[in-house]
Image (cartoon, rainbow, N blue to C red):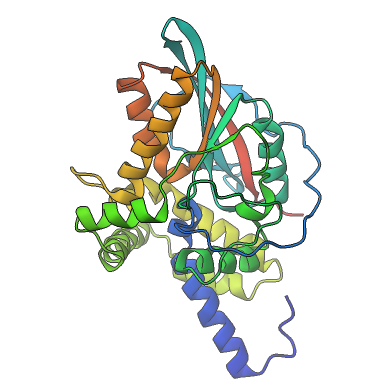
Amino acid sequence: MRHRSERPQQAIGRLLRDLYVLAGGVAAVLLAPQLLAAQTAPTENPPAAQPPNAAAEPPQLGEKWVRLLRDADDQPVALQTAVVRYTGAWKGRPVNVDLVGAVHVGDAAYYADLNRRFTAYDALLYELVAPQGTVIEKGTRADTRHPLGAIQGGMKSILELEHQLEKVDYTRPNFVHADMSPEEFFKTMEDRNEGVVQMFMRMMGQSIAAQSEQQAQGESADAEILVALFAKDRARRLKIVMAKQFHQMEGLLSSFGGEDGSTIITERNKKALAVLRQQLDQGTRNIGVFYGAGHLADMHERLVKDFKLQPEQITWLTAWDLKKP
């Protein structure tokens, strides 16, 4: 990004825009855009397959779905997402179901790795609130007219990352839509007496609580952001600030839940797992469920309780490389 030629008012405007985007960034990265109204861009070649960037390790049920990896000097080196394999039997047949946690803006290598892994599944269930039968062409651009899409698009630019919709190859024949239509989504919200403003206020409450906790621990995200905005390696430093927020993910997303759950998490998860049940009933044995990491704690409970599947292993994938060049 070039800043030297900016006038003072332009620089202030850019900083205010960036701060606004970062303020909503954690939720936007963990929750997918809720509507697809994107235009198709020219087809681009899929990224070259990359070797696995994380090794499997024994599962730890208390582990989060997103983690900040640090080196021996306690410096952040990667933001990673979990792929958890569940095994068991369905109607007498052995089955594997992988929960594949997603962040919706990430490194190009991260999406290249996912594209390679997705070819191994008999069926890959994916999230997207869109009409049934929607086809996501290669190179589809995220809709920046939608609030979450705008935040994600802003983060892509500010953090020098790629957007999931633009890099994941949704045209593969094993991809299966496993989410609500817009009509189902808004009807469910209406039935549950939920609203966008209500969800936003709950999210803001959790965000304020998270910031208070950081300040109590002697950390100041505001100061880090201001320093990062003027640093030479601006994008990397801002990514580190954002990555530190992800350990608050569970509390943030619980603001969309409660005893009765929510449309944005609970009801969409029910829809996704209904599609999973259909696939299992059809005899599909090796299935991936590719959903935002914020959905997976609830999905884990449902796989164990309702599907009688047990977690067998965790593989960690690097979504953001935070190491110095």
